[in-house]
Length: 441
Image (cartoon, rainbow, N blue to C red):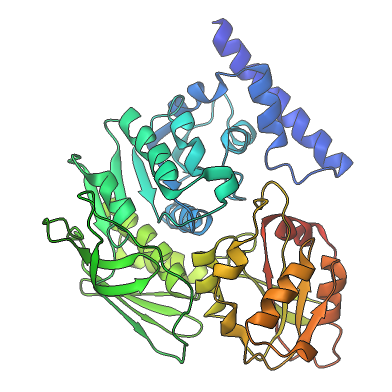
């Protein structure tokens, strides 16, 4: 009885905290209410599952969590299901608690919860919430100062899986680290691509690739390698990429992709192969859950990008595409999609949430920008470091502009009288947060 009372009081406290922080304009409110609730009642999340009566879906991995969980949530909404979702990407325990605390009510029930979870916090989340599904997108080297090497990140996710025996896993078969989570599990659905075809001119990436060894210690061999460690791999010991339940292939165009799954073709207007993987993960979840082709395609057609993940905005009259970059593999894939005729802003910070170590800039394929037709503006706390990287990427120094102020950099990129000029913004995480708070015409 006392626990229930604390839970209900938590809901009231959350709403009061959220209203207060929004009125004072001190925050976007993606975690503050959650922090307040967990401080008042640390067991708050353990009460939330009983308000979800069809399924709880968790999404984790290095890249693509926000887009994949957003697509899953949107498919469910399109199917007329009620959903709780931490849609703004606040994916630690406070962000998850925030989403539940602001949506739940004592008499209100939801069909699904879709929870994006930070890799290192997933096992902590599972102490309170038992998930029905876990989608794992990929494991790339990311923020070594926070997460350590890939083996450490993988161990966090494995620890979470081990806590949840009834979990259905939806795993990227093309990533050898991710597919390994399905070992010794019965309820696993693998997804991946049999073939990838680029239908526009794209330079071969010069970004370094990780060398992965099989569990037996020998280096993996690839018959097809799509990017980073993702592809069709095998080892002489017998280990190999697992078979996918649904056979898929993709044609990647400059501004959309066609994903064939068995005899159905799904179209996503999210750009790049990395987003095709995100869309495929959501499609496979939806098919596995019994949703129709028509519902899935309707959702793909109407999906709006979230918070800097291929986000399209009109800034000072210019069509602007904002794409978060935060690690070598993700940045290199984004750089393949950049419109070289656009004005480009690259805003790099080294705050805690970005990772203090910015050596990843040198492992990212900024050489893709060497033929940029217009100015490339280096901005953010590490603007000078970014400008140096651009110089060594082969971009003429006359095209490189240094403007540490992110707002001024965007204004510089959008001050042209010709409103037909497009703008591309590539921010790190805290630079993206700053952009989201700024007021532009």
